[in-house]
Length: 244
Image (tube, rainbow, N blue to C red; front, side, top):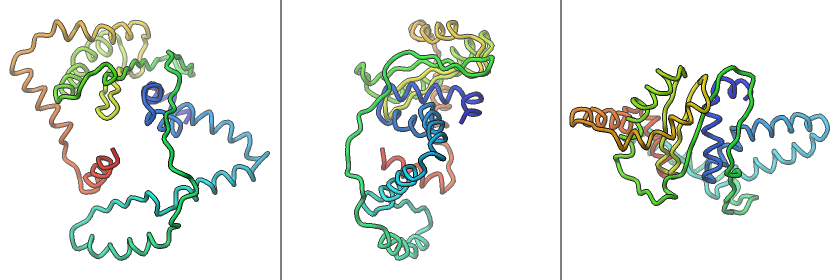
């Protein structure tokens, strides 16, 4: 985890911002972000002192997860193999407990919505800024995919990477949560990069794009949205779609 923070700080920054803006982001950050690292450090200190408590917590997690209640099976195969698998899946499910030790509940937790700086032993920065644009009343349209990719490939590429000297600069729009994020990678700047992010609105208002450039931007975006997938990836994408 510590190496990940040093080498992939933009991912950590994205997770922290997401955790401030929606509950799903908070859950993800608790299981793989700075909060998780802090949990592991505290857990390490308790292992030798109070293993019984830790063991009981792990057993409680196991009993909570291994249950037919809420279980969702995702199989990807041809028709014949799916048919042949049904009886074995049924036998597997019959072996699981029918109830969970944890009652269903709604989580509404988020990290406090404050600006923060995380100090790490590196000479570069990972600069992020984000907001939930659904909360401003924005309704999703296909143009959002196109413009977010265009911003990354033009404005942020030119200002953050080429002029600013960062290894990378891009934006990302989570269409499920509504979180729009700006991020830079191995960036020698901080305030200058934040200024670039803040200037994005002006860039878009002054943007003049001919039909050929727009068509290329749309085609490039569709290539990302509808990229070729192997069968396992198709099955996983379908599962994620159902869960969302």
